[in-house]
Image (cartoon, rainbow, N blue to C red):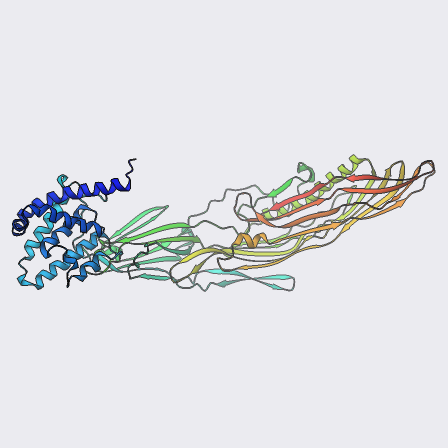
Amino acid sequence: MLRLSTEQYDWVLVLQRERLARAQGALLATQWPALAAKLGDRATAFVEAALAQAQRYGLLEPAHAARYANLWCVWGPAFDDKPGFEWVSEILMDERRTPAVKVQQVVLRSRDELLKRPGAGVTAEQFDAADAAAEALAGQTVAAPWIDGPPGVPQPRQACDMTAFDLALGDQSWRQEYRLALSGQAVLVNRAPVVAEPQRYRTDTPPLPGMPAAARQVAALASQASKGHKAWLHLRCAVDTVCDAAVHPRLELKSDAGAQLFQGQSARLVKMPLHVPEEFVPPRPVAVAGSSATPAAAIAKPGAPVAVITPDGGLCRERAPRYLAISACTCGLRRAGAPLGQQEAVLSIFPADQWLIDLKPLPQPAWQWPLQGARDVAPPPLVRLEREGQALPGDAWQLGWRRLADAFVNGVDGWLAAIGKQEALLHPHLDVTPNLMHGVSAWTWGAREAVTPEGSSGFTRAQGITRLVACGTDLALTGELRAGGGHARVRLRSQGQALLHHELLRDQPEPALAGLLSAVKVEWRHPFVLEVDALSHPDLISLCEAPGSLPGALVGEAGLRPRPDGQGWMWYLQLRVEPAVLALSAWDPVRGHHQFLQPLWPAQTLVDWSVG
């Protein structure tokens, strides 16, 4: 691409202005013979001075500059600086008007002024002929068109502009939202009508000087076409005078579904339904209701991530809108004043679906290791999943909580296997009540609009009430310790309760939803309490606990985190055991007292679970 420096660009403008001046100077002899005779050899310089003044006004296109120079032939050189012609500078210095509008309005005003002055010596017919000849000359090769702007583009001649452009959304009384309230330890759910603020926008004034005309941003909520016409868009192009009633106003609508064009009378008032596309959700295999829980052996490695992805997306899933680009235009010319010009708006159409999930997971039963008989299984959680009042299957959520129990069993199996590898704690016996992620949690979410006088934007409204026991594990481990030639009975117990209590209501665009949901989290550390009882034996060394033991703890966290695919949020729980190292003191009749450290198990992940 050829790039010109500032000096080169100015030189090209001067060169082109000189060529246009010579061509238009020769035109004076036919259109303004008296003036040409008076100027003589100075005709080209006269026109060049007029073109230089046009360039200072920003009239760089040949047709605009030539028409302005033609007015010097009517009113004299530098007529815009003379008394009584203040209106010329007012028009040409207005940043809201395009060069084509400026020139046309100055020409029309000049013609009106000539009609008011019968003794001016120039008839309307002569004025029109000279103006048309100057414009035709600018499009010829001999005039060397300006490098700015394409030559020969037809310019508007008749007043054709909108007086106002209206955009409005129809009645919103069909919309409803879920509302949550806490009553004791229960969550009450209610569907209530949405009191939506009316959206009606009118543009009837041109933009302020120096302010770019930005497209109006409007958000609307709509349902799928299969649910009928509920949301409506109303557009109105108000006009007084147009160049051609079959062409203007011109209204064009573009979206991912295609484009629609309205012209003339049909574009003055348009009413159309709004829809969002149908969402295709690929089927996912989930456990059949009433089937037994997945056996722990089916989960590969102890502590490996276990995730159940729900087919309808996770909590508070934010769906992208469908965009509708709206453009309304005319010639954009008024006889006086800045025109309204082209009007643009971007309509963001969000799905109006409102979601609800009400979960009531139950606590897991007490378990023992080694297993004696069949292991009890907790009943599946009570799940109420709805969209717009219609019940949806909650099998995937129930499967997720069953997998939590399976993951815990598998993790404990791996932990006991790690204890066995240390060969220090013999015949371990474990009594545990997991009490993981049980209680009640209700969430509702869906799109809503935030309305301002200038437009509106869409955001995800969300409300959640959570009363969960994230971890109330009561764990007791006993065994026989043999180390350093000694013998002792060891008991370790960890118990505590980590509550995940949270209430959230987001009914404004700020703060961001991700920040609010990230705060739905709880962390805990439940240390092990150690007891060591020495066991006497004539052939063994006596063992007892010494200062400095690090029995470890049961640590973890639970809450909400984003799904890997970004389609909403999911519940998660991570449970780990810290490494355990005992400080022991042994008494030996030969060597006497001595102390040493005995590891019981390394750091181990028990559960890494998520559902959503």
